[in-house]
Image (cartoon, rainbow, N blue to C red):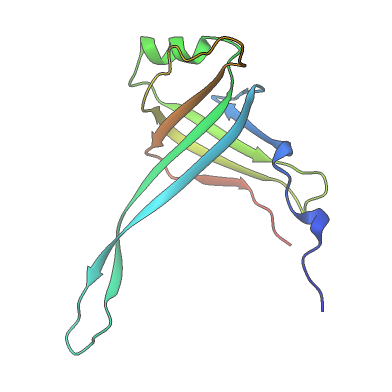
Length: 141
């Protein structure tokens, strides 16, 4: 019986994040998701509750080591500015690479200062997005 080839499982080490086309080489974590808002529908002569998609909300987080103040400054100067994020996963042993473009990104906060003496400084950026995600490249067998 054939199963999953373990070497084809994607290693997050080969993930990268681009913000407005610039590689964020110091960022080590990316999570982007769409959440679906389902409404309940009750139909006559049917005990089973049905569901209808009412809306979609996009959000995410990028996280990594603090190296510069560029993003903090850009968001502080214009909190309503929108950005574009491209997430790329390109493990050389995988079946291919995945790139997903997220347009109209708006950061929900600006982590101006967060450090502890004797520790590496990391920063986390939470965001929402209004545009539809675009699969530039997708992994398929």
